[in-house]
Length: 74
Image 1: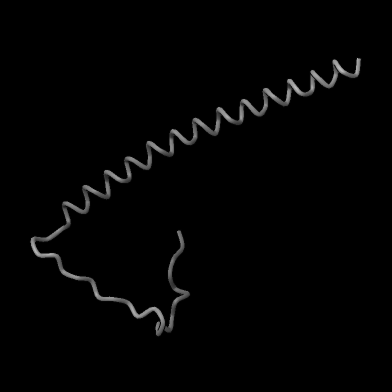
Image 2: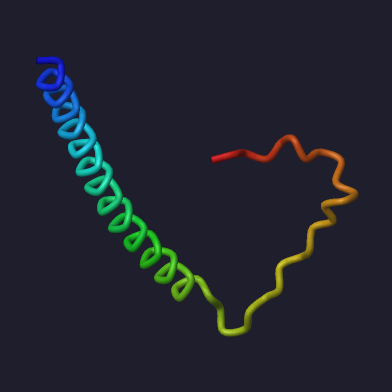
């Protein structure tokens, strides 16, 4: 009798884990699609905004920067 209850609980847990795996797999597929869309958008923006002669950006002196807490985190 105890063995049957244990088996029932393990099967229930097995189904819950399987459901979470499927949900995670679906979420990962969605993220992969969104990632590819973002990469394509970045590539398109880079090709649209690139001038004939590339102008080098000024280098930042991070070691001597006085206000580093104003940077936003995404």
